[in-house]
Length: 266
Image 1 (cartoon, rainbow, N blue to C red):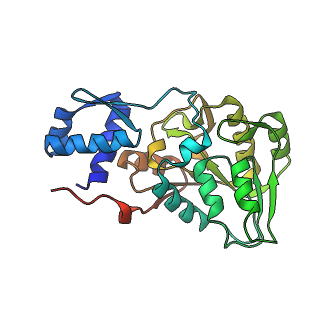
Image 2 (tube, rainbow, N blue to C red):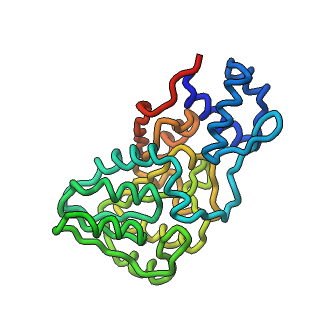
């Protein structure tokens, strides 16, 4: 089993039970104590678990935790770039699309330079800045008004009102978390209302979420898993998550990042 596959199993178990023991993981994974500890070091370094004596605990965080844009932009860069490139392949020239706030959707915006004739509606200051800087004279960028959040999203009644009058071909939604039951969630109550208005404005919903979002539950639901026409994630997404999403969502697309994965340990 590759290191990244072991780490996905460990992370899934930590999120499911709240904590994992080194001794239990040695038995389950059939590897040495040192190999498990190295895997925990990697996960702890990514901020996904907190190491404790004899194992590690989940750091899923509070349902209202909302890191700032800069803090989130350095997380899972490789996965986000792969997800963005795959999602960009779904964008057709001359269409009207919506892009929500978030670092994965911001990465998507940077991957759209080659698509001509787009009309893009967004409630993200960061996304709008990227789109306006692109060399696409036939592109129209619409930035909603609203109140600014820590993640540089514009939310609230002004944003909701402007979105409810629009009709978009595809909406690309970034999320704080996704889970069976709660669906796609956010830690910001006002942002969830704005995101729901954006989702309702689109004929097709594409959710962009790397594997670390699975099992995370924010305070408010944006949309159910079954409302997504496509979910784009990366190849570290746990098998259980893939199965659930395949049952609920219309389609699951997996962005390959194997070229940057750690080598298999002996």
